[in-house]
Image (cartoon, rainbow, N blue to C red; front, top):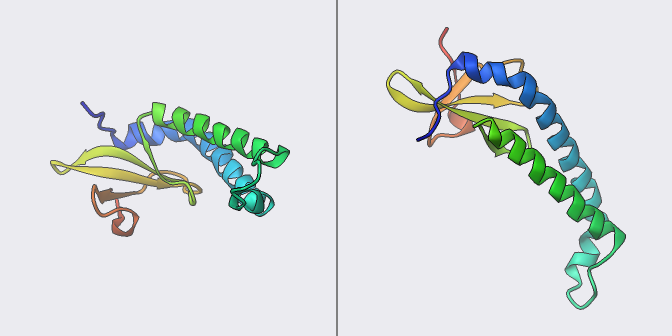
Length: 126
């Protein structure tokens, strides 16, 4: 059975999740910088792809995987790693919605229906 968050409960997790998301975004940025270094190696299917750069890339992806697992343990869903977008399953007015938080926002102030995504975000009525 899925866990439904209250707004207070989801906002209460942000102090724990924000540093994890900051670290996750830093690893992502590092990988993006490295892509030029390893692109040639990975595109040449006739060569041995083992190199210090590709080994480091594998370690970086493992770090990202560990951080994603830590964030998922809180019960939220990482929806977009490019911008640090998280959703928390909630119930609002008798229907299931996602409370939506984007890295850099102070608190959760938006929600959207399950199938509309970020484009359907609306401010949570207070």
